[in-house]
Image (tube, rainbow over the protein chains, first blue to last red):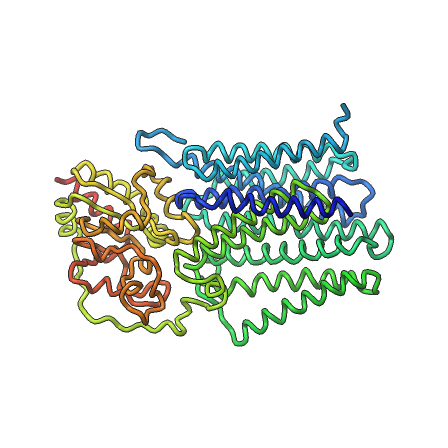
Length: 98
Length: 469
């Protein structure tokens, strides 16, 4: 059960890191931040891939896994692309895009 | 080196986590935001590739099928979505993330069930983690779908209330917890799989019930909160499959969502529980004073004369600008005013629109340089020197009752003080109350003028006036 303690340790540190990272974000970036972090929450794709790719499964596990891959992938690809599209529109006065 | 070794995969996960952290940090600054998003997507790619190296992962056909379908659907949606529809798109993506976590939790339970050819003899901890994944994932999924439907106006944006609503939600949550305890303590009991399915069904119902009483203008809070939930669901799934990268990424998203939620609540001077449970804007309890006075209407021609003489103009956009798709017309008028020698700014309230930063995205789409976008704290101190404050489809965020009337439900909410500008002009269809159901005394002030009609048409009329001269 050592690894369990380690998981909790990582979890707590990550939560604090998250609070520190985001505490000061200008309001103009609120939407991109939200959709960008939303894409990160698609990390559950990792779990979906393992479930969908393991062989000794029943049919139901494979079905659930494949569905999970589909929806996580929509979340990941859609989330990153839409964030990039939004940020591409934020412009300088001189017309340069960031 | 053995590429399939556990150590190498773990190393990839650590690098991916670091990339997520840097990506999020860079997303917080305008100059680096776009690169930050790219950095975080590279982290995601790395995590996906590393996962495919697992020696347990042997069958790729379903992975390929799922990935292709998902990537195509996500990519297509992201390309084609209109900027005005961004809030519902974000809600939908968010819901899918929750659904994916839910499916992973269920699949993992089922896998262990099949493996042991009996109820899972998993450690208590794993069952608890599975329960949390199912609970949070389901609430995120169904809650986001309701938010999507409200934002896309597939259902009414008004709060849906019924008798004993809190009692029903509380009872449902209690039942869920009881079922969770049963699942964890009696893993071998007959019909325990049914309990698992019941948990999913009840959690889905809870998600629906907790979002329907929340009104349209409170959506920025709800979306931020659901965003946080989707991270927590991924985090819980990480505990199910003992995977660090899920825990780190999920916790980061969970924390960032909480912070955004707090910022939104603060901008409305309301507590989170007030937003979630009060059914604000349902008309009940929101008693308005019925402000007396005469609202002075103005024609586009007269409005043009005021604007033509103005040295400084501040636009205050709101949800009405998004509805009227008026962002391009606003930008065009702003440019003409600048050419005319006026200083033009756009004052954006944090909760204007239907999601955090909604107005910023729309104005960015219309090519407004972001240096011209200012926050209320910056514009309020100089409002007395502003010649014209032009309110485009905003209402509650400019309601002086929030400052003056202690009995108003809005009292205490930080607003943009347009009533202190030399002249304020409100573009609006009618004198109807805002989302909060509160009359706006701004309309009856001495220095206020109402430009009635569709915001886009009114703005285009003003643009035409400028061009004629």
